[in-house]
Image (cartoon, rainbow, N blue to C red; front, side, top):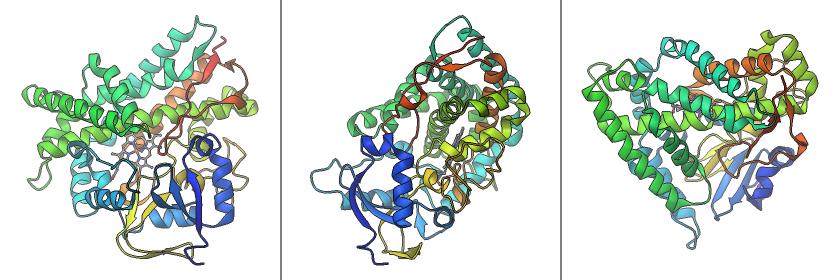
Length: 407
Ligand code: HEM
């Protein structure tokens, strides 16, 4: 297929696209495996929609995540009237924005501190926080499940894990929200600066008073006499905080929405909470919180799905689309907590596979189990078909999820 045939000038990620994400991806996937599209601000990107292509692209070292070159490519491609992107340099130097060997070095150091044991050690606190948040909902007839439960849980967990001061947690939520908002580059820059300033102070405190937390672990982590520099620490903590805030929230939110839309699946979980781990995998597959992997660009020409993508092009790997590809998952639109959702790409694939996957799974499994056990009669307020999605090209999450907890 020629590149022109793969081109569509539909603006991607306008409100209509986000509101009807699955239907739009179904159309794209059925039409052609790789679509050349234009974003709202005029950036041309190549969107990969099928499972096999997405998995291969995520493992392809010719698709680079080097942020400095990526920023140049993006700014060159933007039409003259559009805002130039400025990725805040203090925060952007983290491993998700790097290729090997820099990525390999940073990931090795972080893995020393962010261990499976440390994550598992959070289990009792996650149980306690979940139970406390749900207790607080018990005497309310109507509540927004995102505000009351899905947001505070991961924020509290990642903050405690890292050792972030309790009084600053609301600031963090505001900063990360602003940073992920697709529309306002100036406020995003301000939020990034405020966050960087706080992180510098926090690292300073931990250096003076080491504690039994992940941040101290990161400061102390060594590999062959190598350590994270001050700058690397700041951007690493930033990455962990943002990734730890905005993803698990929406895994819980989108997952509960799917359960409410499929009362037989909710009833199956209430009857057998042992199904929770499988249910969480199906939630990740069916409506995971990350629409795309982050941007990549072609360091050299690549052929994906029979389409030749020249060097120097921006590529979006459609994780949500891949996970709903009927060639990989039979009847993908059926939300079925008993299916084998194994192999979904919600956490990415390859060298950048989500470092927080174990933590996210643990949090979501505990959250969902507590919810079905505490409120087996949970019902939506109004129609579940009216769900409104947030406007973001990265995060797939609800604006709110009003429910009647019941008893
Ligand atoms: C990377 C998804 C939760 C930390 C990624 C990537 C995806 C992802 C898709 C790869 C992006 C790419 O290749 O472009 C998710 C989802 C989560 C979640 C769906 C929750 C349901 C978390 C949590 C943390 C975390 C809780 C940490 C506390 C990271 C880090 C990376 C990453 C550090 C970069 C890894 C690297 O570059 O080697 N995540 N994430 N994530 N995630 Fe997560």
